[in-house]
Image 1 (cartoon, helix red, strand yellow):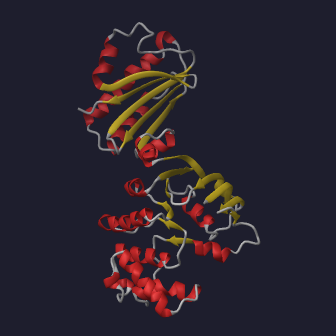
Image 2: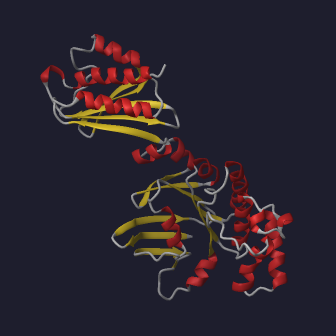
Image 3: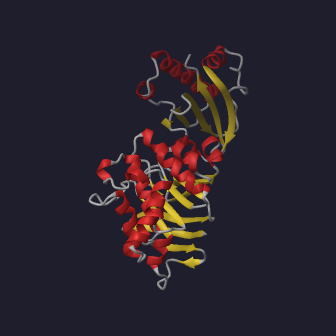
Amino acid sequence: MIKVEHLSKKFGDLTVLKDLNTKIEKGEVIAIIGPSGTGKSVFLRCLNLLEKPTGGKIFVDGVDILDKNTDITKIRQRMGMVFQSYNLFVNFTVLENVAIGPIKLLGQSKAEAEKRAMELLKMVGLAERSQSFPDELSGGQKQRVAIARCLSMDPEIILFDEPTSALDPTMVSEVVAVIRRLAKDGMTMIIVSHEMEFARNVAKRVFFMEEGGIYEEGTPEQIFNDPQKEKTKTFINRIRSFQYHIATPDYDLYAMNAEIEAFCEKYGFPKKVRHNVLLLLEELLAMMNPAGQWSEIDICLSYSEKYDYLNLTIENSGEKFNPLEDNDLFDDLGIAIIRNLCENLGYERVDDKNRVSLIVKKG
């Protein structure tokens, strides 16, 4: 139904979208997630031409909507949009808010438009509030009115830009229920959201956007339970990380330890855990460069808020060398200390580097 080829968008010297490509089939529900500033909302606005793309092509049912001969008004009628801020007319009743579009833009009579508006308000569970004004409604109710207003124009596609971001958690379920109803009826929907559970619950396919494009895509199960790419994993697991590069054997040990302690303290790890991290690091650093050898070392200490674990990774370049097996310290006290303080200890060779990873015990 929608085909996007090499889409790009710049604002002056700032590139927001670059070489974005995708296909969206009729009846699909797509959730778009990712960090702020990665072009999610701009992508939506390019789809219905609220923003004019800098380059690329967008096809809707085979029609190039960027062609100068395309009727943009008709395209926008086919592609409705629901915003996070509702955009309701405060001096109009709920019924009037839903009916005004068909009257003004589709040429429907007031009676015809209001009849259809009442049907839509019943569908979203707000028929009894038809004579209320927006200020008399909760946030969830306002958003359901906004959805009904969008539906009154009989769109084939609905774009949702953060439809639940302004709502209390208790109100999110109201909007989710309506979107699920629309999905069941076969409506094609593209939804930008920062709320992972919302995206998981309503989508058939999830796009993770990063660096101005679709970095990874898949089913909700794939993206949320088994993401394949590092930036997706970091975002999904809400990982906070500390990285440190050791360039020479004369590095400042005290400065590094102070930064690690500050990182652990920031995320609430007790003194015992902080001590264990430093002890593990001391033993591993000694093993990564045995017998006076030296190569630069990269340290990454990461904390997953979602799964509540602390991961320590150390890697260096050079010839393949497993410090857990390939040196004389394997049976030494150092290995015993490491195994006692960690879980899932392992070695792998990645991109011509030796990497040791472990999960720090917190008990």
